[in-house]
Amino acid sequence: MTVPTTEASSMIADVLAHRYAFVPERLVQLPIGQGTINYRATCADRDVFVKHYPPDADIAREADAITLSALAGLGGVPVAGLLRNRDDQPIDTSTAYAVSVWEWMPGTVVTAQPTHEQSRNAGSALGRIHTIFASLPASTGPSPQAQAWLAVDPADLTATVDRLTAIIDTRIAAGTADTFDLDAAATLAERRDCIGEIPQLVAELPELTTQVLHGDYSPVNLLFDGAELTAVIDFRPPDPFFTAYEIGRMAFYPNVVATTTDWLSTARALLKGYLQANPTVAADDIRASAQVALLQLLTSLYGVKQHYLKPGLFQDAVDEFWLLRHRTARVLLDHKADTAALLHDLTAHR
Image (cartoon, rainbow, N blue to C red; front, side, top):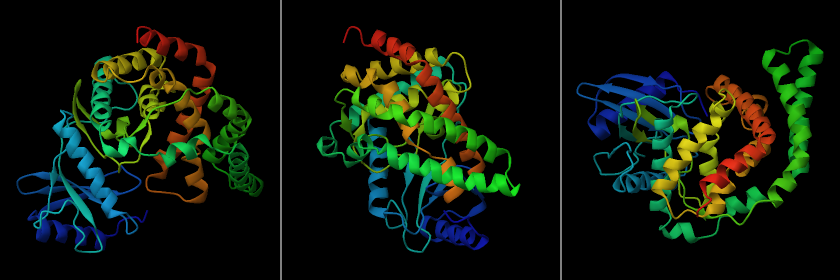
């Protein structure tokens, strides 16, 4: 992702003025997002959220994601309202700076220590989203993403770990290694030792449901005002994937698991909210959610891989997230029996 320039900000401001009739008094880049560059535009009578898509974005699929957001809103999920351009288009592509513009929603992101009520509300919204999207035609189609995920190659993953480790070793030998290099070396060594467990963890999975999901349902895309969930944002294009993935990702989110002692009770609150909103979810999807979350962590090098091969925007935050994700994988491995007991308890009568 290219870092925005003054020219880019000026061009986006022109798009807002001429294509949306919003004249921004201030246009401030927000420290969020890896796939898009995001801004808060302060205009005379309102603030709006502006999402700037990179040149290689698939605009048609991004428009499909906007449709999903609107569909969720019709189903009672709090979402941001899209503001269309003067030609009634969801994404403005009249210049090289493609943008979508949204209502500015109140609320704050809660990542590390959600209350049980916040967790229940987050789970309830996810349950509603899954219920609504399950009936979409795309939900019954094949899931190449799921097939690829199940076919992860431990040897290939090991080779990538070794490649990253070699880069770090070179820095250490040259005396240029920093604190993150040393932390990364230690976590990559631990990750390499865990890779051998992946085939058995995959083999233990039951048959899992795939359907259209939110696509990036995580605390960073939820806004709260106290306990109230005010908005679910940043829906992704409709690619069917495991329901258990999105459930597990939220119930066992790294910022919570790695930094708190009551992460199991937080997971229970979220899952209760989810089950109340989506009572028809398959029991196996709930019971497998922690293992799917664990596998996603073990098979992903997100963060450390970007650091050494292709740094992105706000890489420092991504570096920190790698360390949290790695710690969470270790916790989930060490507490497999505890998570299994929780999930079986919640589905005992299903």
